[in-house]
Image (cartoon, rainbow, N blue to C red; front, side, top):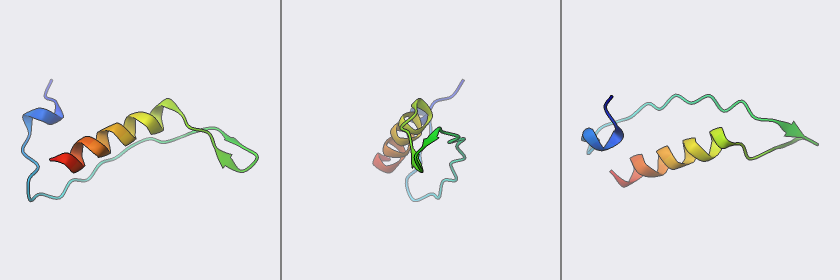
Length: 48
């Protein structure tokens, strides 16, 4: 399986599709593992 490090993203547009279904309590979105992982992926893409 290929990983982000095996691709060259320089000067390219990237479409990242994520599933961020998260719990909502008192009209506030709770930080879920999905949001944390998506954030890590976005940060990694920004570095490239």
